[in-house]
Length: 95
Picture (cartoon, rainbow, N blue to C red):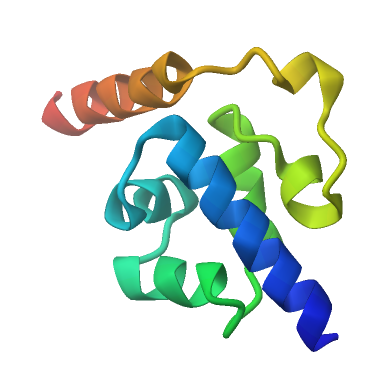
């Protein structure tokens, strides 16, 4: 169990770094604080389904995070998709 949690954390960090986001920014997408994001990435805590659903809706390859298998139609997702999430979210907050 501990190895799986560690592997998920490692892949979660890889996905975050691929997007160019900080732990705080990436955690915000998943609805968690920076400390929770840090714990997920270090394998000290397991992310829940709601967090993963938020990431998936923002274009993050959740299948890869959980299994290590890259989703073929997700491989083209870029940083722009994640940035667009923040633009839309900020526009909603300011209206």
